[in-house]
Image (cartoon, rainbow, N blue to C red; front, side, top):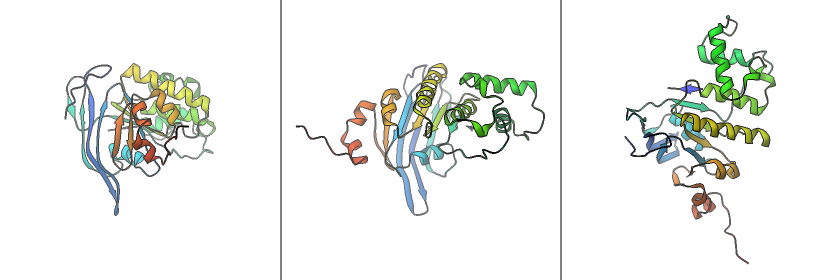
Length: 255
């Protein structure tokens, strides 16, 4: 799903580009969910967001795309030094519910999402070709005519990823993208995301509890608990006292 950032002097994998999140805050009722969140997200990097339950991880992604009101600012600088407060986001939500008894195919679903007309209308050849190209990008050509209700967790994530990448966004937001996906599907999904990141020089923000995989694939890790506690390399975050405290882990006692 696509949804319509002060400059950063940083050379990313493919050039000068950066997104800045400045003093983000979210208050729901009387509860402060996020406060004083400041981030730099660089092009070509995969940044993982971790934290205990209730830390505000999913809320931060929803605030970035405007689904939740927030305070603070968002600034984007692209590789051509063009500045904007409205980078293009691709977004895969944590929960995607639909009627699995519906006879809607992947083609029907993607046409309805992308072109905003009823799926019972005739699908033009040009529209179908664009859908086929999108599915091919994520290795899901074979799913075109498959019913949405029979897709596995990994197959559904590939379809959602195909939607999120059309058009190619400035920033791809993934909220627990492999929840409910088996280990084989998880490995394939992360490999696909890694390949697409290199191909398009994507900035990726990934929310996940899958700490083992995060340690392997992330360039940076943000430890969040209503505010940013740490923003560093995976090794530095996972070895920190802040990490142990946030997850209530006891320090190892040497024998």
